[in-house]
Length: 156
Image (cartoon, rainbow, N blue to C red; front, top):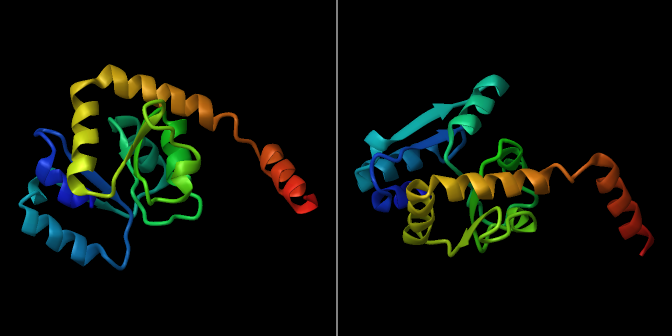
């Protein structure tokens, strides 16, 4: 979806895809078919230092998995003060992303994702404000809080 969205994202905005997976060849083919290969960097597997640098350099983080169980990417983005663009069917990220507060929640359609990216690209102050709100949300999540929620849920 994100690669397809790039066909609708205003230049010079670029996409960096970090990580490797079984769908990489198909994603590269999609980029070729959409004519956006020149605006996408396939970073592959990255170490922690590089990942931190990628987050620091990002305008926003697009994370649109289908029915993700938790979504650490969302919290990592928030801790880097970056807003998250996610989809209505993404699952776990929806526990954290509040549309219009610390990110954007869109329909799982390339055009909707592109619109959200373009909005942040044309309003970097909005992206920064949403990133700050995400940081405020993420820093309240602690292991003690997780344990308390789990113990409380088990006793219910």
